[in-house]
Image (cartoon, rainbow, N blue to C red; front, side, top):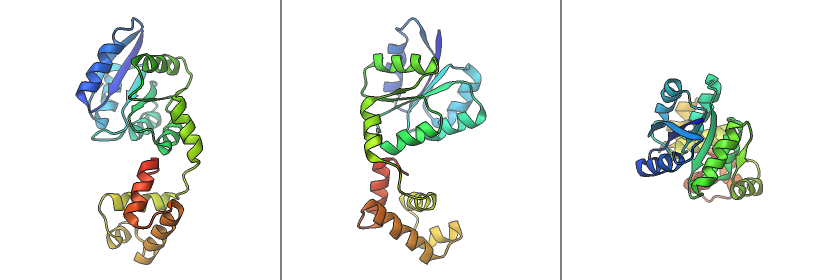
Length: 201
């Protein structure tokens, strides 16, 4: 029996996935949570073999949770189930030790197959997501450029970012200009959107 934890903030989807997986005799959903910051406690309490995580959740996103589970030494394999098939997400997930990546519109049989494969020590990558990630190439942004774009996405202005990161405003503008050039964006908000669409921030 493969013990599964489901983490998804959409209650209807989570319940439907749990019910459908429960029809498979070798799969047992032992825990369901609706927030990313509830996953670690649920993993500790229920000891699942596989954690199936949505990316977009309140509290903490699925990729951050995957990174935390890996750094804490949790034994469960991680499979990402998401409607956001962005190439940068796939690359970040792989570097966080995620072994499965399945789109939410996939049939339940595909998710069940992914769970079985990652539990057995293998990898499961949806073919279309993998192709899109390869086509997109590597993230061209530096960590500093990503951080500044994340701050802009959160509503910060140049002076606030400069103070927070202990940089001059001119240096922040230089990083922004570099990021905009790399992304082919005409302005800072366009750069943020482009980076978000690729899953690079």
